[in-house]
Length: 114
Length: 111
Image 1 (cartoon, one colour):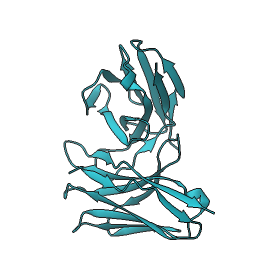
Image 2: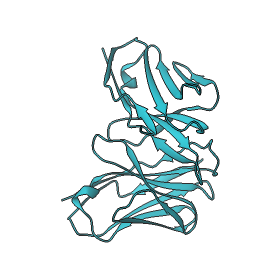
Image 3: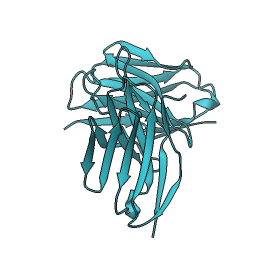
Image 4: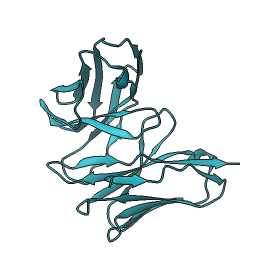
């Protein structure tokens, strides 16, 4: 069966510090991978998605970046965090590129920028 | 108009009640639809997929109305454990199919 891991579970970082969040998927190959952010009391905002190694699409302009160095690894980074980067970061995967693919989410990282 | 819209609620219902949520979408070319459940401070979890005319799983029924561009989720015989936020997801066609989430509908089931 497929599993998705994210770490760390919680993170408190000062403004201006760098960020690296990691997501890995097991039990599947060539998944689509996604990074979402959910601010407190808000909906999910799609940040990045990837359909293959080295292929990253950005949905919103921001000071975040994403990389996919391996098939089942997706990394979210920032060089300098802003207060507005606080939120619940969720990684998700789905199979294939057609329209009928459900997403499955990791447990998330709760980031607080102080 | 937002691509996917939901009534945020909260819907406050007693145990045993039947409750229904609607979700409207703006892109008529959308082909697949899902309902997710999200508990407080947890990740969303897939509840149901809605591919054609609808889907039923126990106490949960999802319906799709393409003509009016909405999907619905009906929960019968509500349980306390059904309290959560229910997210509507529509795959919007583009270069790839991009999942677009509604902001969710909050359900509170009370004794």
